Image (cartoon, rainbow, N blue to C red):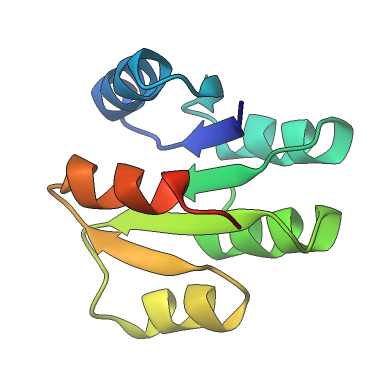
Length: 117
């Protein structure tokens, strides 16, 4: 079972994604705090990280960098309203696997999550 970290400052997005991923058999840790996400990356191993970009305190690009630094095999997916931006390009350059625009096409995301890393 893949361990997934979900990070988004919108509680509804976090709740919905966590519910769907758990129904699909993933083990999740979800948070609306990007600072808490950084702490979790420092103490736990995640196979997959799904993060927003524009969040208070810690930017999503920093989440990408921390995830890749913690474990190069971790796949990082961006889910953001800003997929056509320089910030998204920075996240991809920092090691994100792929970016998805909001509103999220959940089926497209979960299909990639089931692919071997």
